[in-house]
Image (cartoon, rainbow, N blue to C red; front, side, top):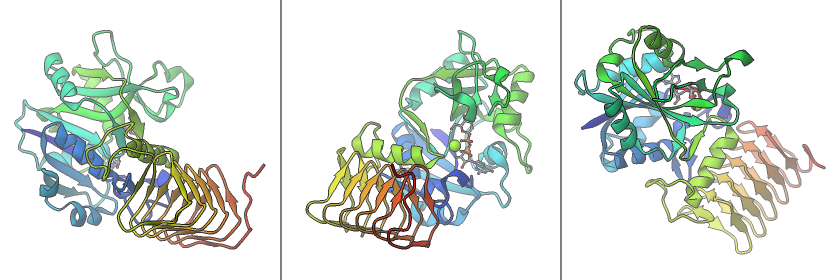
Length: 359
Ligand code: GDD
Ligand code: MG
């Protein structure tokens, strides 16, 4: 039986205001909390028991996911009163595992959408006889990630988290946020104090001569930490560009959840999802966007690559492009909000008050 730890305790600061009331893994992507996709993918890979390492807004996970039986899984919840960082969270969560010292444990960052073949990572770990095996991916700009150069045989040569100096950028291979640990290696992480697995554990293991192995993989990969990538991930799930057994519908240009109402003549495209109880007015055009439960999009609004919070309202003819609208916000008619615009929860914007970034 394979067990996993899923790290879901981060504050999701870069996704505010969506993460003010909802922890990042519980924000819906393609109609269900993002976490549901990760659980389904882990289950499909043969994982039977997952420990959720929670901290920020910890209390909301269990009422939704329960004991996991509805997902064919056993779920255990471990909560840090004070955030213990990625390493501290892994160490704490491991107390709830039954895996033997020499057996593998999977660890997942809670905000990654990937098409990684998880069983292939486990097989590679076995074959390399590694202490830790890391999923690596290549990105155009690696600066916001953990840099992981490897030797031709896959041995990890260094681990540099979020390099500050240009000289440190020696590779475009980054830590993709999924690891296989030999169980006893987790037990060497200090307990009860904050530890960063990226800044402390991995560099420390390398200094001590441990064998870290990297599997560079070219399948779909996105970190959902920023609004643009979260919205993209949701649209890609809706369109089936990346598959998840948890999407509540067939792949297509849009996904309209039960209880939503879309007026004839409204156009939904590019993987747009419309949440339960939401309403879309006549002639509205919504492309590649996430409309959460109970939101109202009025007639003639044009929305692209944006996220509309729960019960928020977007007035007639308003244009949104790359915007994030918080829960219960009210945007009046004839506004224009573009690239990176964020409207805080509950904020009211009068009619024709903003033309942001307009040509
Ligand atoms: N339980 C718990 N406690 N979880 C935490 C804590 C904590 O104190 N801090 C962070 N996490 C969780 C987050 O919820 C997230 O799922 C995961 O750990 C990684 O944290 P992020 O805040 O998303 O880190 P990042 O995106 O800046 O960087 C990480 O991911 C990159 C890939 O997306 C690092 O692992 C990088 O090395 C990596 O390249
Ligand atoms: Mg992240």
